[in-house]
Length: 317
Image 1 (spheres, rainbow, N blue to C red):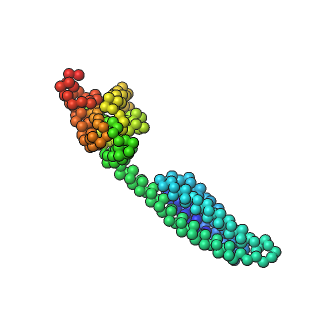
Image 2 (cartoon, rainbow, N blue to C red):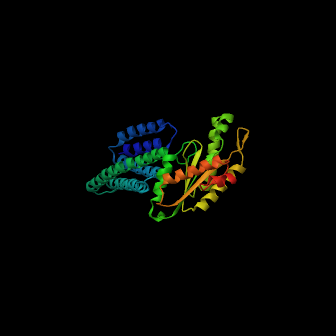
Image 3 (cartoon, rainbow, N blue to C red):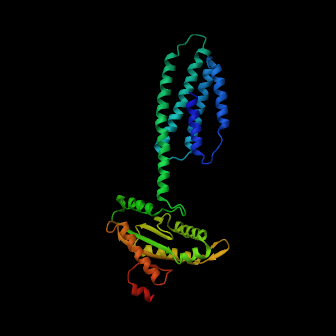
């Protein structure tokens, strides 16, 4: 009975700590305690002590679960409840075992102890079903994040952008709203890589991503969809509003130089903006239209934001 909560605690420690930790001291304590309890277990007082130890272990297990982050919140609460109830059951077990020891008259506690044993088995089974589900949910969530997140910038990658954009726009309260997409690209990025090295180039990408996060993190869905190319989906933003936000981002990047390893590097971005009413165009088509306008921005001078398709007008700017 002691093995059950101890093994859970060991497993939780292994799962919780990314760095490898030595559990040898815990194993030694467990082994010594087991031998000691086995030697004295036939005595009533030892059985009471064992029940109290188990109750304490279940309380500590509940505390460990509570201190950990799990995606499945309801199941987490259910598991904590199971361990706390299990602790209560073991306290009752200790009380029933103490009755014959403390009472001068003979008391029959066989039936209550049988009920405690059945409760112990039911709670242990229920905990054994919930705990793997919790760990699996976290693992699945982590794998999903890895599949949808760009490792360099921690923004969404192309797949994550499309998945999240579709999910947001399918929500009932987002029917017939304005939807805008900004797509931007770092100007002359190949020159940065060639002159300063790819490590500097990676830091420049992260620097641009940080600007995007600061301005758009609470506003829309931000992603790195290519080498030095980023996309931002803005639900409930008109074309004019999206262009103003893109201009603000472009100006911030242009005015603040990027410093890395004593190098002062001036970076700029070009951007294209597209817009539609939700449902009139797909996310893919909106992105394609924004990309076309990004190309026009680069073709007509760079370091600008384009939200229309008239190249002649752009050449006059």
